[in-house]
Length: 297
Image (cartoon, rainbow, N blue to C red; front, side, top):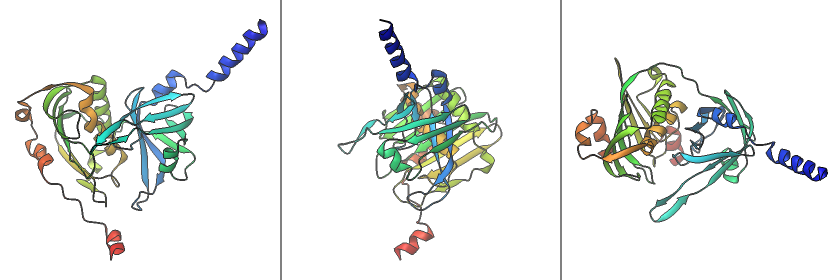
């Protein structure tokens, strides 16, 4: 009997020794930037990678431009990308699996395990990330944001959010809701948006950033601070700061984290009316870079 109890005890200890403690998984919440750089498909160097975690079950490894469910089990970090319908084809549904080697409040080191994770990080066997810290103390009054469609399933939408979390939403294409809505953001999501705004030094942000490929969406943000109005547009993703990507992602997905009601008067409540019109304008891709032109010739 004693031998049996000893065997059971050893089995329990061995099966649980790799389980990440709950307090460690909470450390993940926030945004992370890689301490390494990769080459993009178009040859750009010094391109950082990022991870973002909204809570203990929703995050993003920035494949597919959406948040996904994730879990930590036996020291494995797994992202479950959602399936979606695109032109009557089911896409998505992939799993990205990483082995957690180190995790604390400032550092995260993981190893790609699944084939797609290994492929996306090429020859990197160990991936080191550091947590992005708040750099500023901006108090915004209002944020306006839109993103257009692309040659794929990029969502086309417009939102406005005030400092209290009241939101106006207009879903055009590839969004879970279509038309005009109003509502209020989940307080935790509003706090994360405020943090992500303060991760950025807006005095150093350019008016626009453009990738050199021609099948991407255009996103644009306008923020009313106390004494300043800032604008920034982004075509594709390549040269912009990682912190801007993180902010654009949560704004694009923010409507999913609030209770929205159909509001036929929402269009009349929009403050940034010129910005809101941008979602309906044709978005022309930027001209190819000189390097690309030389290859074509």
